[in-house]
Image (cartoon, rainbow, N blue to C red; front, side, top):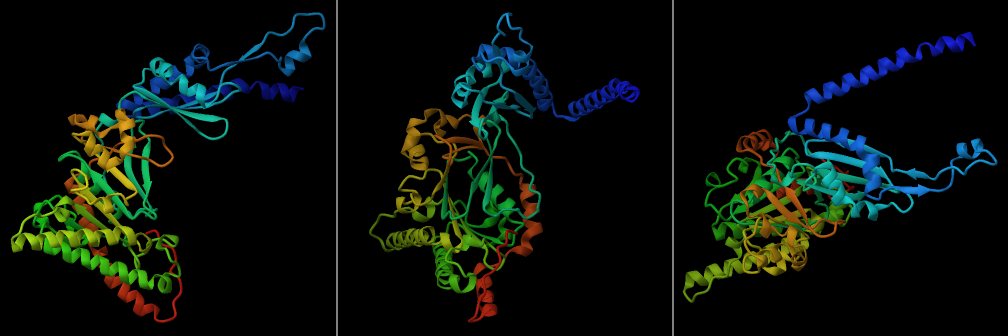
Length: 463
């Protein structure tokens, strides 16, 4: 007993030390945090302290008439029955730059639907711009409250210069709840990007190039319909990391498209012998068999219909018709051999990008648009049912860099803030990775010579 009482005397000092360490750590975190996170940390304290009362007012509690085990043991035989218990879901609160993330438990009669119905009350009580509620596993929900709108908060991205760990993952930016938005490029034949001039289309694609440039398993070619030479356009800083580039000259673009179609045919005829699979994505891109990305900016330049009876007009009309046929071949047949086409245009209507190309691309992004018809062409007819998410509402200068897309597994459409990559950072990455640039056709020729008639499957590489 003396030993027990001796240990008990240390409880208060130990508890005081632990509390002091926790307070010190909290103060250090608060001092080192940015201004937005400091506000969110204070907001998180209010959320925790006021949760029990708020949950009762919002109908997020349940009354349990069954007494607890302790109440049953201590209850007197002739005494009053124990009072019913009011159960409140337990929560964990985490602050960040934009607001708070609250993870909560569900209770009988208080599930996901009840939390979603109470979202607007939680937003008012927590002083948030908007609140979303999503499932977080069995018996759990995650409540995201944003105090400042991530869509109107410009962000920048500084490329690390390191190879991506996953070549199938394209990080686009953050959604309206500041959650990271990523799309899978595996088995994707094409991507369409639409939006009015200056809305952020090229900047979003620049980030794609800068993020994947450090990997030798990705090779990029570009046809830019805005300029005649690379030095005059948006890709002047990135052209060093591209194995091919052409401007608005239709003959040069036609030659580039023919070159990639020939690559597609050679890959299709040799993939089983070289990789041992019918689909490159079963083993992933590698430096020997890289993902070949074709970026077609201002795509309408290469597909427009020329009308006229003179010889030159007829020649140009034949060229654009053949360009459409060649790109259709890449989009419809290039997926399994590792060819991805990214088409960028102000409007993705049928006269800008032929529908037999546009409608095969499973990923479509649209920055700001002026008309509903342009939004429908970019995102599909269903965007009419989601007017709040329409890119027509993004014409304010505050929304430059914000895109809309349909995400798998999410209802409706998602608005995404894409970060800005400076020209200096783009030039830095291109200069540091220029030695990785290689023609996929030459890589294939070397690979075929090295494998010979008897081949073994290549290992899966992600860098």
